Image (tube, rainbow, N blue to C red; front, side, top):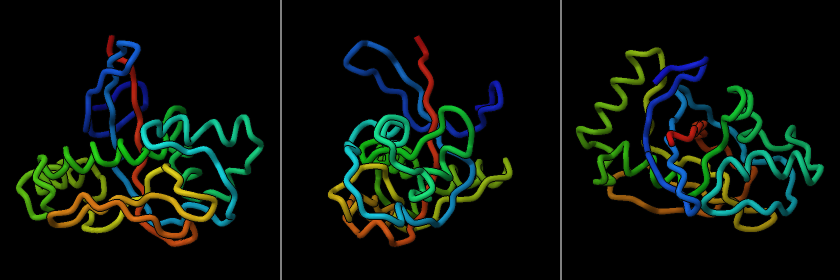
Amino acid sequence: YEVDGVKGVIYAIKTDNKGLTWCYLFSLDEEDLQWSTKYEWCNCISDKGAWNTYDPFNYYGMDINNYPAFKWCVEHGDGWFLPSQEEMLWMWDAVSGGTHKFDSPTVEKFNKVLTENGGEPFQETFYWSSTAGSADIAIAVAFMENSVVCLTPTRDKAYTVRAAYRFAIN
């Protein structure tokens, strides 16, 4: 998908509780980064990555420079965000074809599309979500063989980050 400067791979189409239908994309690139360099509570929830990415910095005075994973996603441009735990699980479902097996043919197809378009393939690793567990831990989702595991490591660990974008389709 590429429109108006936004380029990514569609991974989910979801309807929210207001009846709006959203198309979700993931970025072609990824980066290993810390979730944060500072331990402070932020109200990051399980199903709203865009809210998690923008509200703490726009309304609560938190400094995005202390949050490398979020900053990297925002630097992709307007509307890009660090996906929530739920949105990362949708991504893993799509990439693995619902099998949660990293060696599935679907992972291979997604990775081929990524590399053919100048992107980076998914790795068998942990991906940060924007969901916080406490002031010092956050949720990482395992893109690994037979896994839907969510870990709660300390935020200063470096894990893989992939940005997301969404737009309304109705």
